[in-house]
Length: 59
Image 1 (tube, helix red, strand yellow):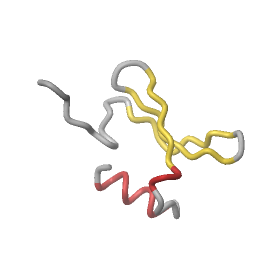
Image 2 (cartoon, helix red, strand yellow):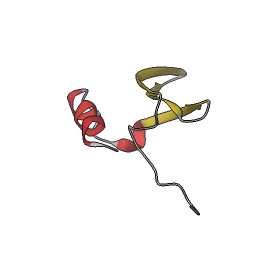
Image 3 (tube, helix red, strand yellow):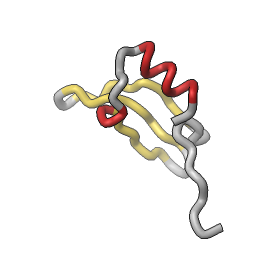
Image 4 (tube, one colour):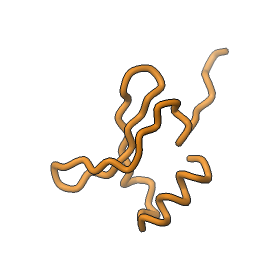
């Protein structure tokens, strides 16, 4: 994750990245949040896939 994402998670008291879920919405867009029971709580919308950017493979 980028520095801003880590800072936000720390501010929210979520130090464990294993509790974070992401949903892919369209091409690059991602919806990030936590699952509590059967409810997905949205932390942020990432339209450009910048919260946890990845390098393209085989390019």
